[in-house]
Image 1 (cartoon, rainbow, N blue to C red):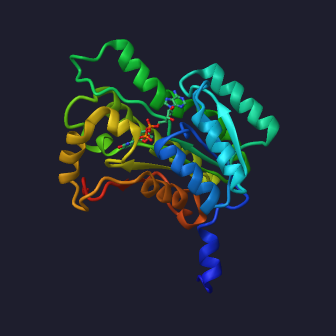
Image 2: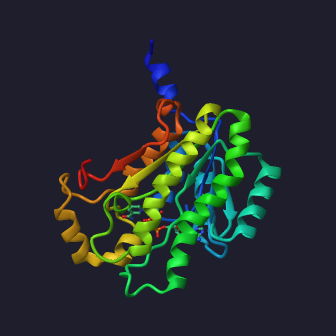
Image 3: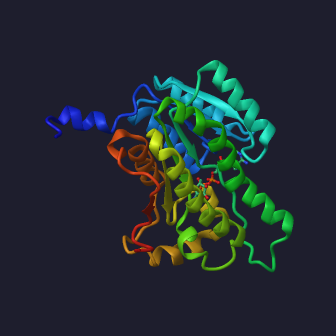
Length: 262
Ligand SMILES: NC(=O)c1ccc[n+]([C@@H]2O[C@H](COP(=O)([O-])OP(=O)(O)OC[C@H]3O[C@@H](n4cnc5c(N)ncnc54)[C@H](O)[C@@H]3O)[C@@H](O)[C@H]2O)c1
């Protein structure tokens, strides 16, 4: 029984935990990092591509807000970079408690327009990156008997993309299978593995691939009548990372304004 508001609030807190978020220099990942740091009270490790300035600026800003934040440079699809970055993290601060595999790219191409290199690149970032981070951290979380991993899937992983985005939709479906399989492996140790399937989220990725008219058309098909802000995905990530979700594993939470009801 939850006997007081304080105990209820504590369930949603991730204070004292360390959260590693990939692709967190912009968009949804950035919002998750800010939410977990400022609302959740966690220390955040903010990954993005080497050479990206945005994640370093985010670290500086979070620190200026009194949060505990560290930058991690690595292309998530590059095994060497990922392992080196994780080894450095392990020696600097230890194993994160929360992993959010968020980094992603898309190509709007249909199968006719998709070369094998394009296909491999998109799968390498979404599936390869998620595999590398999960494979490295899951055993440590399991040994510790606690941890939460969150994969960033998409509504297109359920229903396919309306046009094109063939590699992207394939990767997003793959993440759902990966999530369920890891959840079965990790369940007995108390480590939870879940996915979020956003619908249409107002980020650079959406603007770059759909343009204003495309976004307006998509918005008409959302029962709640709006695209999501990145914060509306971040709050769900915070929930999944927290003890409030302690009986949820192997789930894909739809955050899509009603775009797909299943
Ligand atoms: N925007 C949407 O409508 C939407 C919908 C469903 C799911 N998603 C998913 O949410 C996640 C975030 O998307 P977003 O819209 O915020 O995208 P975004 O393009 O705005 O941001 C993606 C971030 O990931 C980083 N990144 C890209 N490739 C990387 C790599 N190889 N290694 C490390 N970092 C890398 C980029 O530099 C960028 O900072 C993605 O997995 C995306 O597929 C987005």
